[in-house]
Length: 95
Image (cartoon, rainbow, N blue to C red; front, top):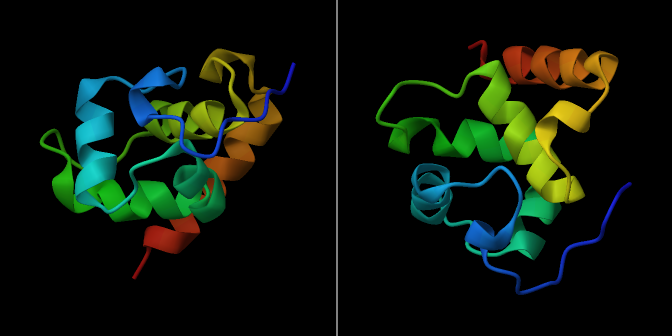
């Protein structure tokens, strides 16, 4: 079930967002659930890449961001939608 997030809801209160991802999002200038939803998962993933200690965003992390926006665990996102997100991210990051 999709759940709307509160405008000023802190990132750490969202599903799938742990301390490391919250840190990266903050460093990228994304500090609330509203800002994350407004920018979208693909663009947020692109923006956090320079701040990730472990390298570029992986497929699971991208889906985790999308799940956070939707208010659900990322495993609940249908595979076809996860594939579509990954394809969009791949296109966006190819330079």
